[in-house]
Image 1 (spheres, rainbow, N blue to C red):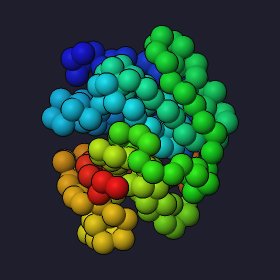
Image 2: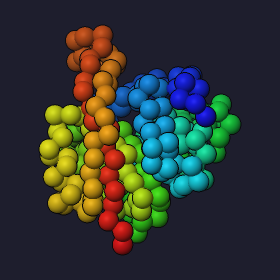
Image 3: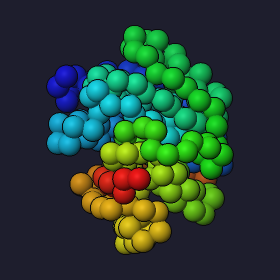
Image 4: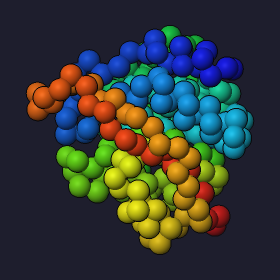
Length: 208
């Protein structure tokens, strides 16, 4: 599948109708999502034929992109049941299969490297400090091949140090810096759109 085709399909997905600020629910736009997964597959071979987990899947964008790029099996994990309902409807619309699991990432309880690749756009940790690090820690415990994640560019050194020193990554690489357009979803947003610099990371876990 070509990049433009993938982006177009993702652009038609339903997104949050009533986003929850405490969960930092922001849609992963089709521009970023398509490039994230297209790079994971075409530069590193981390999607097609692989078992992929989408942590904090929300409405399913990254997981569904994985399915469209021929992942063997996709699991979407999110704590919010309303988001999972939308993700299920999006999967039906695209006619792809994705398993959905309602669970807090910290309570996931998976043991060992049971998926090949984790893809995620975790909370940035602005509402609950350290939320982004909880996601990264768990992802690096359960992935055997790679973890792809979006984090604010301002946290780059902290992310790299934590991944390599504390979370068991054997490599942590910023693939590119992207502009993340946050729409005006919440009352405290003063502007119609906020432009944030985010890093697309590829982490390689240590093999057990």
